[in-house]
Image (cartoon, rainbow, N blue to C red; front, side, top):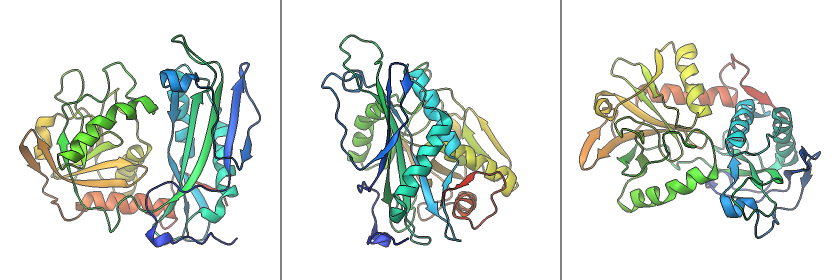
Length: 341
């Protein structure tokens, strides 16, 4: 199969329209059979539920070319489970898990020419999403929906390597104590836009959100979970019912324990104890781990011992091991990698 004529080495992290995407419609209480289409345009009513009351959920995952030339995807079953939980929380119909994984396979196979080659540093980003389509003027759930999935080739999230970030403790709350922080809904990300623009305008890369009830405990950023490393090498991640259950973060915890023999625990983490950690990273699909070098709490600087030049040693081992599993360089002990082509 001949690849598209794309400058893979200089690809940015942005949208490039590909040949095919998957579409399935929900009407009269059931999903239709679904189909691949060339049409990248969505046409809906001006009064569609998604436009009036933000009834939409989404996911993000990647396909990779492995060292032996296969195209694979990483733990798509967990993305299927998470979009199911998101849909239930917003009173949307569940798109079946088996069909979600089939859609991943179909979109990747149909766009295989756009999947970057091994060693390019680029990957094929998949965006599944679902939204209410029928007219809704009263405040209530829609009764018709569309599930779509497209893919686009993307370069590494950080050009030239991941340099440690400087983040600020935000004055904004990301989610309510019993709200929707634990699901991947568009409304959560809309809520974070003002905060991230404010942070960027002040010279910071990201926000650290605290728990909305007491504002003393670390939660997450606008689009990634935190991971900390103690000075004695233990991996610690925040535990909270109002943060998104990151698939990358959960995988890194397993990597820490089962591949690297490290201690790892999920627990509540106070802002006060952050100064005592040796390393900090942000976990997500886009960059896997983004190292953090400095956290600023209203003028008070917390400088991580790992510094502002490169990833800390434990964070680097975690990153290298997980990406090694994804790319086929390291044994996949747990069947996380799904071979597509």
